[in-house]
Length: 450
Image 1: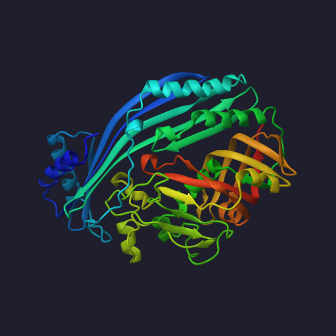
Image 2 (image 1 turned 90 degrees about the horizontal axis):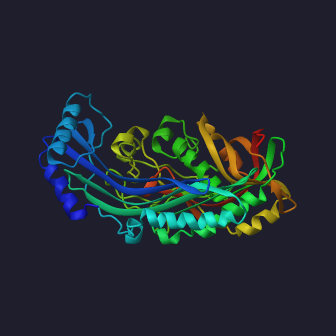
Image 3 (image 1 turned 30 degrees about the vertical axis):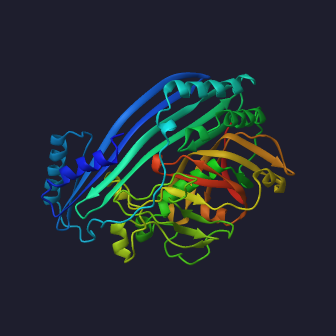
């Protein structure tokens, strides 16, 4: 960690040397440790200390971007000059709105000293505890435990000065028997909030319950999706349809549907980077304050995420969802996704299912089949169960689903009161906060022999 005063001063010194009309510098630094384990033993420990500094130089409406991993003065100046040279050789971007102006940001406490200092030995002790839980059943454990700290700073020639220090801790684990597996995971800015023994109990319990799984034929089934399964669906829906670029290109499933009912009224999906019980973060990666935005409110389509350039095209204000300069081609994207909670306890949801499937999580999801209809396909994994007459009767062999998500979400009858934080593509500046979800219909199109 460099620290706010020292880092901003260093970036300002480079900024003062720019000959461009407008200049922006984005700094992203991270120090993290990762402990991987398999067959109930640690097999890899990784430590990484990395930086990435992006320069965006503007000449009129020509915009050039260059980046470096070095903080030495000469390398920073060379990269600044490169971004300016690139801008001079590019055509004008008529939609470029100019760099953002200074703004005030919410004050969030996103740094935890204990998490930042969490050592490989500390992670090893945690792994030892969760392996002890699996040993009681003679199962094996595999997974990964990551802890670290980071800092993000943005300065520009218009006066933007944004800085935020961060910590994060995440763990995922899979308990395995000869015929089954069970999954659990945890995420927090505070490592002490992750109860590895509790999570191990969940993973082992799922593995135990799903031994010698049954097989059922593909078709339409009533389902209960646990938070990890809900989150993986939402990440893909976010990627293909909740940003302004796909909305403007009319490839989004929300294009032409604002103000219309698109799901069950049980469903509310929004982005809230101000939620301090989640992975809060105050600004986007061009220094615009993040705003809470509704995508779907009680089943009604409401809007999408914007950065400055996409907002100009639609004559609205940025919602504070710009990505880093190297990912700018993706447009704007929500990183703090939330599915609003329901009113039912998770333990009670199963009782309302006559015949259906409980799904712990999905993997290998593909969302590019039919984006205007939000068609996704993927596989169940690490805890798929048959429900009959309100009770889990055993594990199921994994199934492939293929369905239009708005149609499936249109059959939602209940969401749980409880929500969980699920690690997402946003890394340390985002996550998905999701409840369990009870759908009357999800279409399964294939089955496996395991």
